[in-house]
Length: 314
Ligand SMILES: Nc1nc2c(c(=O)[nH]1)N[C@H]1C(S)=C(S)[C@@H](COP(=O)(O)O)O[C@H]1N2
Ligand SMILES: [Mo]
Image (cartoon, rainbow, N blue to C red; front, side):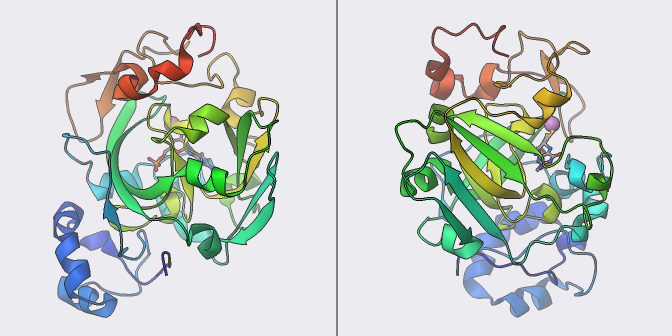
């Protein structure tokens, strides 16, 4: 089974980086209960991480930069459904109900479906990829994701000749999600990509990070990761993927169109109206780093935007 959520595993009090390095040995040599005992985990505390994932192949993309500590990546998060403060999502993580989980794939596809998560994932080989993620708020992280190319899923359900964009939607569950009781954003959270961006091999659907299934606050059980775009494009807890002919509306663009564009490519030369975008604070570091065009993925993705004015299409 490629995916399972285990609310009892609590990596909260172990050192995650060390865990991450030992993971390959551990998953080979111990069963779940064995791992728990080995690490002295205390079942029954607030779950912030999922189950260790097996059968994950080494990805084709990695980075020579140190990985952000799991503790930071899972506690300093943006997930407005669980609150607008950085630690709200980890505090309220258990409010997100992720089982059972279904995903609808519809719109301009020959084979529209509604699938249980396991059935969506079954044919796809999971791999680990270390990517930079840069928030539009000028902080960044380096995260080892577990996932597979979004393009594989899209191909499986056969986009029609009319498909030009892909629209994504997050779960809408105002009875459980405290942020959705407020109008901090128009719910459900929506994002979108042009079809060629969605088909690009760097664009992945992630189901895990740091060797485990995703913590709820990081977008369990299924999220997008588009490493050359600002973090808000990487929509969490996806329930619907629709192929469309027209450019779909997106949450942050609707909220503040002058501040957040549809494309949202990381661009040190286009400042946010309220702050400079040429530098970023890598979480855990003191000095700010220079922000790289397309977040460092220029060589791989710049050709997608050939001939476009990236100041107009920000
Ligand atoms: N559904 C949903 N997805 C979301 C958000 C959100 O509020 N709701 N925040 C976005 C923003 S602004 C960022 S920076 C990234 C953060 O991902 P991380 O918390 O896993 O680092 O998630 C994005 N995906
Ligand atoms: Mo963000």
